[in-house]
Image (tube, rainbow, N blue to C red; front, side, top):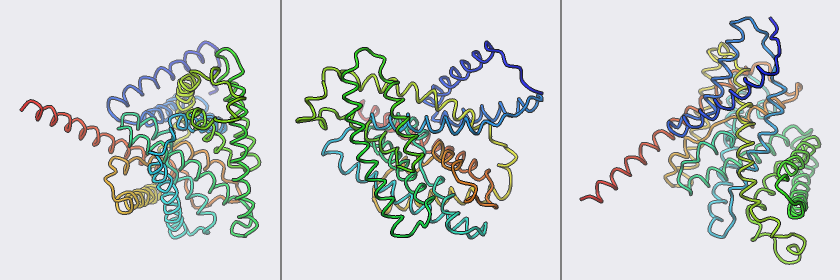
Length: 407
């Protein structure tokens, strides 16, 4: 049965979803249950309610891809607008970068071996599937880390942002022909250098634009330009996400980075309050995009696929690999007590976006899409458990401090 469209009903439905997502955020802050899990559960419920009442099940995958791309831009920009650069944070940035890089590579190779061994698939194709599942989802982990102490929160923001950028770089590289040839490697490095140059130029031009435009209606103009740069870069296989990351960092560190002759062309007076405004609007827009992305993603999930024996075994093995690799790096190599960071490794928006971008020529015949859904859900549950335990520990520490202060 086809659903009849009514403008008023659609407005009510969309508005109800936004209100529901807001309530989920409140519940998440109180219970540490990731709001994205609640959003995905809502999407799954909508799928089965539609099916029960005989309504047509729509193919929403194209909308998921579009929302995913928009969400990625907004979430990386939101994260970058929280990153302050100073000498005291060099160690933090270095640790988070190498954490993202080493864990990404180690997890990708370990998952590739698992896929080639159990599913008997070729290495290069298996590696392409392994990369998306090795990327930490900034869309999930950054909002969830909001109540963590500042040092831990900053580490998570940097690590998740680096994981997104490095994962997409590695994924795009593996899609190139003659991957391991010198010519391909040099071409890819050239693309990275070009992306950095474009990032610097675009950031300066956008700052000049922002300083000259009067009034408050300028954020979405900048967002539209950034989105065009990102989408255009993706079309020609440039690591365009770097543009978003660099622009956000520059905006949040204007006084430090815009000096000398460059400062003459950029009116600091015109940029007063722009960082605060951009943070507010970015957070609100990112909340909206994330809401509809995970609702629609949940709508695509078939629970019967998740209950397959192969999906459970392989999905659990993949999550075990992710956990062990993260434990070895954070606990044995960094040699620091990094709880609850050990549990903060959810997979989500980038994983889905890259998975849907795998060309048909590189697809695996024995890989079930349920494995991807299973990994996303299980890693989100692990993050929830870690945050709950950490929350209880913090509460106990507070009670201990109060008790000692009264003695």
